Image 1 (tube, rainbow, N blue to C red):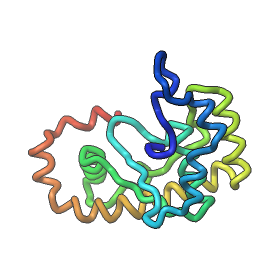
Image 2 (cartoon, rainbow, N blue to C red):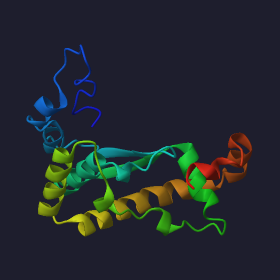
Image 3 (cartoon, rainbow, N blue to C red):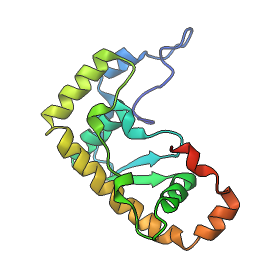
Image 4 (tube, rainbow, N blue to C red):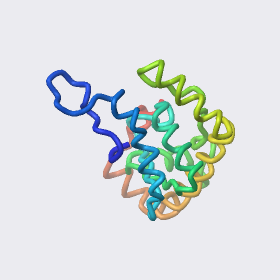
Length: 166
């Protein structure tokens, strides 16, 4: 997304191409087709659930379909939130599952196009499983490393972060 599309193209007075003109070129698919050797980074933060955004869901779908490995990266707040949700020290996998079919986007035309492409690639259940698997593997590695620093993180970031995800 970051490298595939010029984001502000539809702003008044902007000289860059608009979103529709760019989508006609299918830029994200071209980036994925180049088979990036280091895969694709999928960034999770505590501010927004990225799988509620249909374009993000689509990008992961295209990467998975093209055998480009997605890797999860998370903000520290997100990681500490996951740790706080797991008081027994075990990662709560229910916090990692997604329902990508309920994702949406601003343009209803884009939404119809994206949902059709995801169905053609095997459907939402298949995509949800793929997302869960790579998210779980990545977060489990981070969880294990970060658990050591949990007490320090609580003190440094405060203990009132839970309301962000409620």
